[in-house]
Length: 134
Image (tube, rainbow, N blue to C red; front, side, top):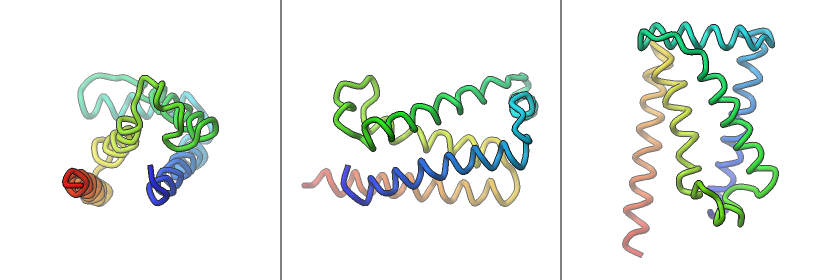
């Protein structure tokens, strides 16, 4: 991963940590049960099945990203021996952002999220297209 991508990877990691801190401070008042209940309610509204376990996926994702950031840095040498390739690991934030900004939101936030995700997909496609010719 080159320097600009490494910087964006680090910014994304910091934004994830800020998002978690803000959600727990301003919305859930540092109550894990509140986060689980809100996730279960939102999931039930969307798919008709009450499931609060998504919070644990977010915890695992944040811990994995933090561990990789602190131990090996963005796409460091240990990725070669990892079960997840650097390319796949880079797609995980997109999956989380898609769910958080589009699936579980509505109104202007959903539309801004859709535009942002579309821009990211377009940029990734253009980068792949541009580098295939080299």
